[in-house]
Length: 214
Image 1 (spheres, rainbow, N blue to C red):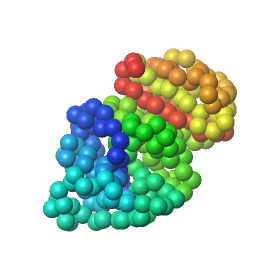
Image 2: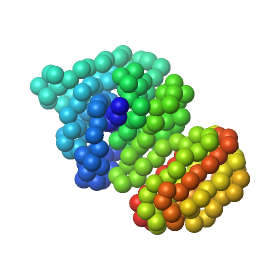
Image 3: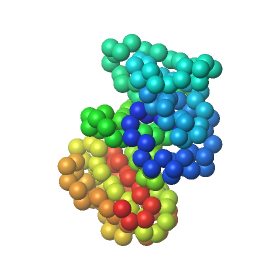
Image 4: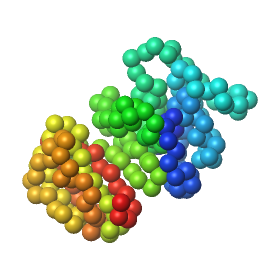
């Protein structure tokens, strides 16, 4: 089951995002509080809105009459997005795409990216779309990366370090390497073959794939 989660951040390159959304079949579309407003420019219908509802004042109430509202108090331990991701998983999603998760408040952008590592999401695959860019987390033992020759691929450690990294199909190969958080060695590699393969034995890697040269 595939879920689309609309977050109340920047809708970067909405025309590209709209095309990407309509090239995929989503079984569940969730608006995260004010992120529900992205449904109109993306031309999608909402199945549910989740959050403390403090950012819905600009929405036409008649447009949400038939949408499930999952309301939480403003004072809570989780952000609205975290609750939305857990809701999608509970509904049976095994793949979740976040749109509008970046931009605006710096701490929210960082938290939204790190949320992809949440162990509570289990095997559910979570990705963030930002215009034509895609970000996701690779865990041991690794996985393939699809794309076209010349695409930009960046590998960023999310734990203290990620080790045992071996790449195939990238211009600048790594062989049993270690990437340490805070250093930039894994930034701006280039895809030479598709699929490329990323293997790692320990840690977590944030992968950012950008079609063409970034």
